[in-house]
Image 1 (tube, rainbow, N blue to C red):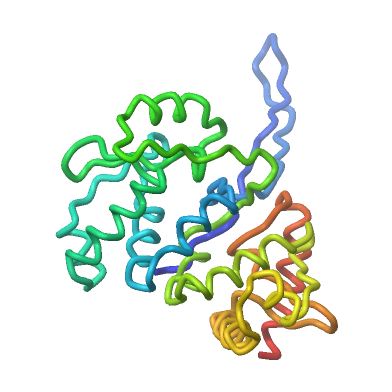
Image 2: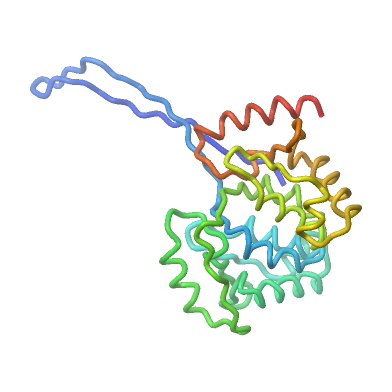
Length: 255
């Protein structure tokens, strides 16, 4: 997937003029930069589902997340269309969609028409109305995802998921562990032995996963800690993220 912009510059003109004559005295232009193209994601319930998927099935979940309509959280693709695009079998696609539905990740409205759970991921400012619409849709499996009000992150989907979508469920436990321990500066101060103890994985699996994530530039290494890519995930506003980005790019030059 093509890397997308994480911020844009916007302008605002302030015009001073004489109210009686309409004569313009001055025009002041102010520039500001804002974050764009990010989604609000609740990490814990999202990864609870993703860790159940094989690498091929994970591609399907990434495709769903990347192609969901922003205002409605709707997804309109058939299994065949997904299969053709991802170059995986329809059986893989159907099984992935079944797992997503079972975990209330998506709900099926009609043939080739789904809604992404706004309690996991949403694109707008408020998900209350989306949640109402979502829970009106019949849930075949009866499960509801718990709401995690303090666990959300900004994620740039088209930058984040290409870095993790070739991993297996066990590997994703490592990613989840890293995200749990990320501070507001995108720093992670945890050893591989501590990751192995928290996830229940062997140290060899943790080491291989960390090597893959490093190769995919999911993070860069610093002395005593690692720094996650702020163009993929962040917990702060743009003003603070600018400094993290500069630090990340500087360290990336030495890879």
